[in-house]
Image 1 (tube, rainbow, N blue to C red):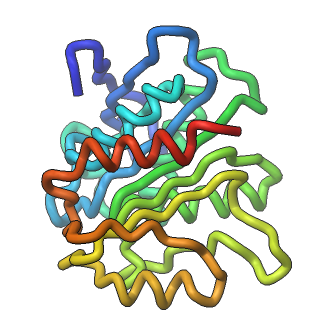
Image 2 (cartoon, helix red, strand yellow):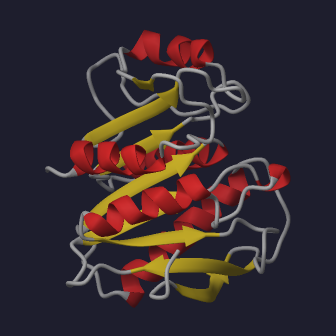
Length: 219
C-alpha cells in the first residue's frame, strides 16, 4: 500500500499465509482485519478496495491486516469456498493480537469486499458465538448473491457488532443491488447506496475511505 507496509509470512491452518500489515503513527488502538475479494477471480490483498479499507482503518488508529487467502500469492493451501478462508482471517487475528501485544478485549474491526464481505461476516458470527465482542463490521459490495453472508441483525434486536456499515454501488455489475436489498430487508439492515458506483468503486475510492472513517470513527 505504501513504503511503510510490511509484507510477511505467518502460520495458518493450511500452511504459511502472506500478510500485509499497516500501522498507524501512534500505538494502535485496536486491530482491523481486511478480507479481499474472490481468490479464483483475481482477488488479492492488493485489491484497490481492500487497500482503501486498510487506509481507512489506519487513519482511525487501527493496525490494518490484509491476509492473502490460501492459494493466493505466497499463501499456501488451496481455495475452499469459505471455511478455509474464514480460518485464514481468524489465524491472522490470533497472530497479530499476540504479535502487537493487544489485550483480549482490544478494539476489533472486521471488514471485507465482495467475497471478503462474506468471509468477514462469517468470522464475526463465529466470534460472537464464542463470546468475543467485535466493535466494528464493515462490508463493501458483499457477495450475497453467491455466498451465505451472515445476517447482521437478529429478530431479537441483537447485532453481530457494535457498529456496522454496509456499502453498495447503485450500478454494481457483479452483485446486483436488488440482491443486497433482499438480504438486508428481513433484518432491517440499512445499506449505504452509492449513486452511480459499480462493483469496484472506480473513481470513488477516496469518498469510500471517507465514508468508512466517518461511520466507524466513533465508539
